[in-house]
Image (cartoon, rainbow, N blue to C red; front, side):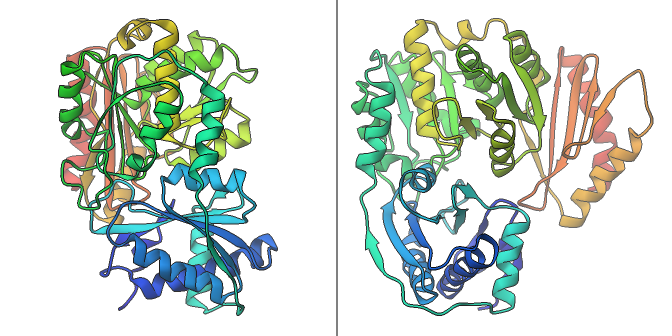
Length: 455
């Protein structure tokens, strides 16, 4: 089959299985990464871990990937069905030179793909394009590597049992969404003394109960119902590969990613020496103000889990996150996005304080806002529309301030508006927030009067 170049995305390689890529490509990609590590990292005969999520296509992809690595002289540690964060964990705790996580993340069941690590860092942007160039130029090495399997769960469980020891057992509900979280979450939570109610625990690549994206409210209805029925303190959902988290409070209200960051940042700042907290451009002004009032130094950065993770590393920041539910703890953890770990930190905060989420966020001013609005368009149009907005707000003004770090974000006295081109899809992303419903409508209309005629 002909390879679709659109699968080479900003943060990973992902597409529709057997339409946009196939097993032959997976084998080629394995070979290409061995070349990449030799050419750009000066690593010969690397050892790479491979894990996969619950998707039906994952085992076939893993086998082809392993074959390609070994044919180029690399060695393979097969970790089996794991979460993406456990793939990252392997790069910090095993003697490996990198990793592949075969996952379609929160995409529909027909998708699959690859999150790729070189050393302890996931590659993105230009490095993914370098892999494409290696494939296009057939720059492959020859060798005869070995493969072995490893059960990484005992070391993962031991690591966090030691950190959390015993948390006060409070009533909580977890929703695995039939994703990869189900392979380890019960053991993890029970190891620290928790007895959660768990929904849709069994990994199933058909995702029979709901789509595994816990940041979309329609996917949280079972969780909301279970929180109320069990009188739980919190409900926590995980996406397909368990690197993103979604939260509902004890009343069943969905908590946005930036609100969750406020909840966690307060606890992190109590012990962190470096007070820098990273948030992406989709996060609320309320969040950045809240963090500053709590003694932090908020820093707005580009959207993208790889970009936020790298910025946390560069700034030696203890904590950061995205509106999309990628949450990064670097104060006590490794600085990557592990939704199961983030869930334990949330439960720890609730258990230690004895407070509800609304009580912990009572100093966060109320606001009227939209969720992330994703408008399907074309690759060309998404950039054209953002440029048109930049032109419209290009003149200095006492009425507003402009941030161009990622797309365009315009802040008014009463709220703010964001427009950015998605890095992964032909989608225009919008978000709006204001202090009143009336002002929200005004701000949203100001952007949409420019955007809508261009769609």
